[in-house]
Amino acid sequence: MLWSVSPFGEAKFGIPYALLNGVNIYLTFVCCFVANILVFPVMNFFLQVVNRYLLKWYHYKKAAIFVGRRTKAGAGKNVEKYGFWGLMVFVSIPFPGTGVYAGTIASFLFGLDRRKAFFANAAGIFISCMIVWITTLAAMKGFKV
Image 1 (spheres, rainbow, N blue to C red):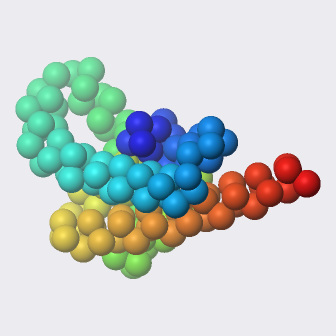
Image 2: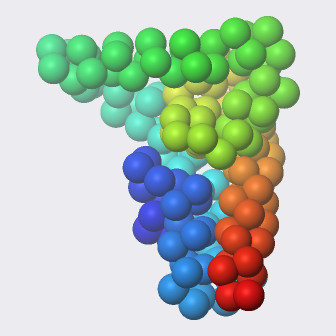
Image 3: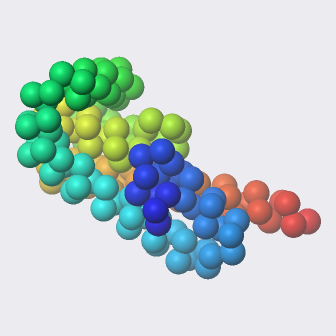
């Protein structure tokens, strides 16, 4: 679960790590999915409340602008054009930089409704978790033969 909450791996790393360490396959999926979903409300609170105060500091502001620009570059056109569906597809792609952290930042930057953004992120996380889970299980089966 800790890898799934981490911005360095999210469920893309948490699921294979748990499965390769012998955790029940269904428990792995549920725990990593739930842990990844819990990132959205925490990040949303951070962006809505804490971020406002931290932007007063130069180094934080510089880092926040860098992250915001990268997120806009990665998700910008799709989220701006397609809204909910663009955000869901962006989050569902299991590549580095396309998870719930970037999805939450993108929804904040583009001013998407929080409720719609949550459901877009949740659906994207579910699809991403399914892809990683099935791929990992298939690879593990292939390694055992």
